[in-house]
Image (cartoon, rainbow, N blue to C red):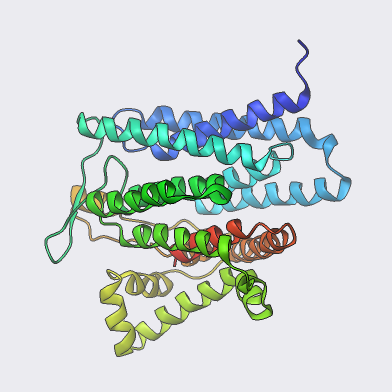
Length: 348
């Protein structure tokens, strides 16, 4: 049986994506860090080769734009010493023949399998064991991931896949499964943001299914959604500025959000904004406990993108999300709009 170029490209894409996902999810499983780094670098090399093979499928203008994006990602990697943007750009550049729904199905299955393996390793004592304690004494477990919020984030992404696949057939059993996943996140990691976002995405999916007024289509809502990345980013930066000015309302908000706003403010005091980003020191809570260094964390994605990956990356990401929302509206993919809005909101 003859294998087409499209089938080869798809196979290479999925293998590369799997290796990259594995390098992220399994990072805190004991003894395999070095192997994961090698696999991730191998995936990057394969994606570059795959892009070169697929070049004929693109128009000259598209090739030029994608080539510029790859060059930008290399520059950002050089200055930031982080490979996330390069991985993302290469996956996008080689996804020309990937069916989105099939990709979501694959992502859903592989994340469930990987999460199950990691949690099993956690209970077998084969992962880093990390607990946090809230002021009220609530114990938060990372469940084999780097942080309780990371565990919550992966569960949230799995639920987003599930809701996307079940959106048109959503029934009471689906609602029970989704609500139960929110309680699981609450019980094990007490990741409040992920827990709330799971429920909000569920409510949004139900709303979209029965919304006869087409509220998402009103002009004001469209403008807000299309520009949500920049709107939420400006809100984050403004809160950080007000915190630095000792605004009592923001100081109170900072306490309720576990000090997130104060860290944004402190990072902007420590680092300038550069076009292609810069190397930023992060001292996570696990490393803080091991070394005795004070925790130095930036949970706000907008600030991290702007400071670590640079102004150009920040602007391009906002532009790309704006274009994606326009596409989703054009294709009437309202469930994608709902999920992406809460993914963006979660990173505030």
